[in-house]
Length: 343
Image (cartoon, rainbow, N blue to C red; front, side):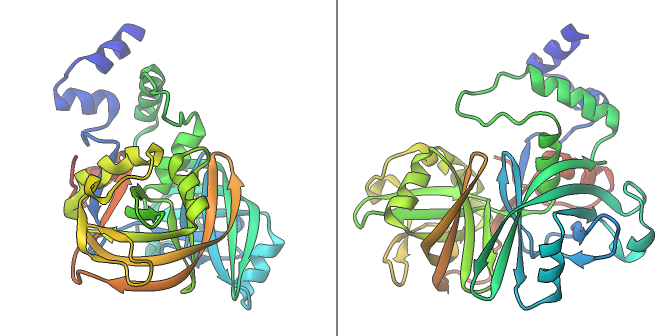
């Protein structure tokens, strides 16, 4: 058995055999796509496990971390939902293809319509004016993106792969929790930080608005990017065109880079309105943010920002996001059209 897995790891094998053994034909672990017009997406529903509460949080929840899995739920303080979440320590997120065809009050996980679920435990509640950001840590996850047999094969193969020293090694059920979180397309944006002369630009997909006036974003503790954000406290976060998927991914190394001159980057002719920071050349829209507070959870420092300005630069563009390979494969297996952009 071990010899078979070693050969799979090292040899080029026909795609039909690879699918037979691993269940996968999608060639990359994270698949880029356009956020706008993504057809037949999953919906995300929040319950308390016993289905006494049922809320659609597809566009409301924030993915803020992967070690551990961190999910943020922004809630208006003067609401019934705030009182409910305050009183309960655990929630369940259900990822469903066709929730209109399912009565959640009688629903069993893995029946028709329910593709995955995450069990989450409350860790922090951050108050931001009229909003509260409930911060949850992943407890367990389960999905049917691949068969159980294929999931087992890929788990063994993952253990055999050589892990780069700079990578965060996800193990066990945490991997499945992260795969589930990436079944919802996550926006890849580019952060610009500056000391007034030099700059750094790096991508992030762990972020999102909290109401209209605040923003949450996570960076890895110990990284240069995080140090720079904490030191200078002002950032510009830009949505970028999907056509920049290769260049945007290539900026990932800058999480560990020093500030440099603008000639080291491809930048747009326009600068941000208030901070006058350079913008990535593929910018579609941006927000200027000021750091106000931070919390730590696992390897992540979750920064909370005040939004001071937002602007659109290139309207009617399709912006960059990505999903996980497992969900992309599930869509392919179910005949759901998906325009993917490979690097």
